[in-house]
Every structure is written in structure tokens, then in C-alpha cells.
Image 1 (cartoon, rainbow, N blue to C red):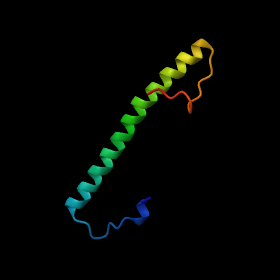
Image 2 (cartoon, helix red, strand yellow):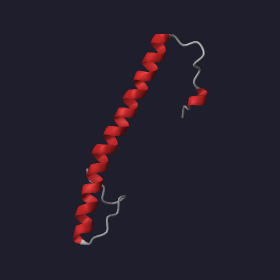
Image 3 (tube, rainbow, N blue to C red):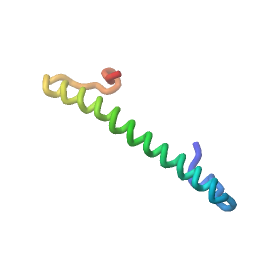
Image 4 (cartoon, helix red, strand yellow):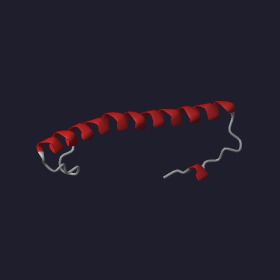
Length: 64
């Protein structure tokens, strides 16, 4: 797993930095989208189970 500490930023050109930052922005956007879409499915299923008085087990009942 890469971390910020392992990345060499000393001699990168402006273009390389822009590409790196663009990839980071896309990754953050993808994570936000997954949180909003996937999280909404889980929250909706949880509310439905809760209103019926049932237990929602995330590991067994993840919506597809």
C-alpha cells in the first residue's frame, strides 16, 4: 500500500504534479460517489427493517 511518505515529489515537473493531483481528485470523487450511492442503499434498507421492527445484519443482508 502506497503512502504519502513513499512518494518522491522532489523532481517532478508541473505536468506530472497536475496529473497526480487529477488522479487524486478522481479517486476522492469516486469515494464520495460510492459513499453517497452505496450508503443510501444501506440506509434505505436499514430504515425499512427498523420500521418493521426487524434486525438489519449488514454482513448478511447487503442490498445489491
